[in-house]
Amino acid sequence: MKKINGLLFVIVFTLLLSACGTKPITSQPMSSFSFTDQDGQAFGTNELTGTIWIADFIFTQCDTVCLPMMSETAALQQLFKEQGLQVKFVSFTVDPTVDTPEILKEYISQYTDEESNWHMLTGYYQNEIEAFARDKFKTIIIKPKTSHQVLHGTSFYLVNQQGIVVKEYNYANSSYAEELMKDIKKMQKK
Image (cartoon, rainbow, N blue to C red; front, top):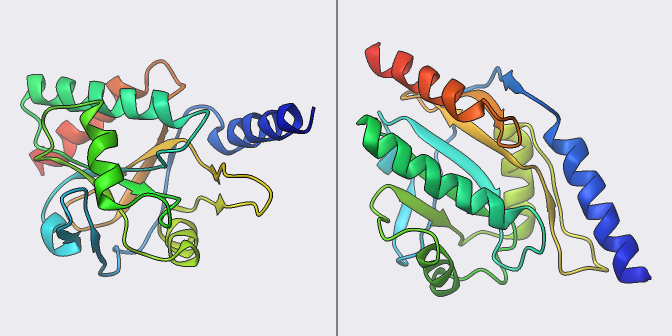
């Protein structure tokens, strides 16, 4: 019963975080960061400068929303490739003590064979990713002491070439991919 209540809490909390539709975000340029990707390499703002990128938050031990989010990211990666859109994907783990580069490497391999434009990041402390998500993406991450599940939002975030988070997309919205693609095409024309 305790496990069911915990799972129910995670689901309800995630639904509340995800809300429907897309939302513009007013943000300052991304402050400089450098974390570690699934290949054990430093990756951050230096590698993303001048690039349009999509961020999300996941973790490998997730029992709920991360599996469909990873599948959505893989589908977006394929769709954008077919459309000729130059976009990078950055997935930040919300459980960095568990998600080492080796674990992230195994995890991403279940979703794509093309990792050149998809980086899964770790190499920070729990409190750092919580503050980073809150300050830069206006979302929350909570790692309860009573569960191995980490509570986090389920949105994709579009970041422009200047490193500004410009819009949030709920992947549960059936038209989000079309809207995201349209927004990226507008950015690439500028």
